[in-house]
Amino acid sequence: MIGKREDRALKAFTGLEGGLVACGSTCGVVTGGAFGLALLHDIAVKEKGVTAEAGVMSLAGEYIRWFADRFGSPSCRGRSGVDFYTAAGQLRFFVPGDSLGKCLWHIRGAIRHLHAFQKKPLPEVDVQPQALQGKPVHCAQEVLRGIRERTGIGDPVLERLSFIFDGGVGFQGGVCGALAGAVLGVNLLLGMDIRNTSYLQTIKSFGVGHLNLLLDRPIGEPEPFGVGKNIVQRFRAKAGSIDCSGITGEYFAGWNEFQKHISSSEQCAGLIEFATEEASGVIQRLI
Image (cartoon, rainbow, N blue to C red; front, side, top):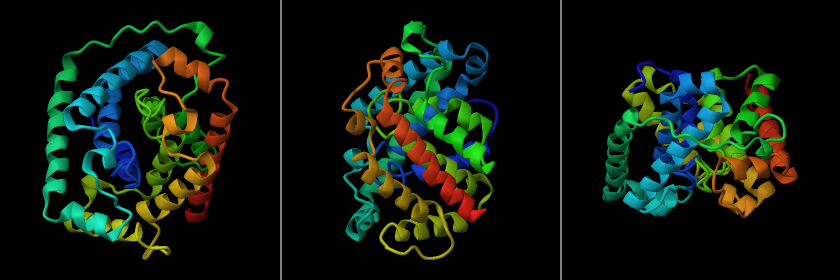
């Protein structure tokens, strides 16, 4: 659909499977679809900046609301009912196969729906200057920028378009952008290079990763799920929740309302720094 490959960004998205390291928050089909919409309009984002970002966020919100209406929930656990952090939950995902089949069906439906977005123009959103105290603040983007500056690990496309995580992805209250940024940053190093990995290796990595979700001490070399689980647990302990709505107590109506909040919130600033430190510390120990 976009006519180019962004394999590093795709690698970073390894950790968003199952609602962010399989913890049940915003479904990876939702986050992947929202980022795909941003990729469709990347040229406009580079040329027009804030106004294009706001338009993309409007499209992302529209997509996520469609997904929730069509499939019941934008969250992985809300949609599938599966808890990947228990052996019974993982077994239930694969046996008898209806849960796995449902995921494949939802991926198919989402892609078919997103295909029509190629013909949609970017909505015009009234971006109010008074909502900004300086430049706009994007949670995931701030974390990814901090990781790059501290470790040298980064990707310009991922960083530029990570604004889609604002307000819990498209302002829908889901997974916190700061936490998503930390997981994305780590997976620029550890994630699966899916287009250049054999099918058997992909299955092996998936199996080891999901086994590590069940273990106190992960087996094998550091990998996305064993490492990501610790980041999620520490962030939840710090913030009290992994979802934007749970942390802020808000569902933001749009661009202006979110920017008014994020530009003045000491809590969010603290969590952005915490997530940056957590991810950067992991990367520095591994490189």
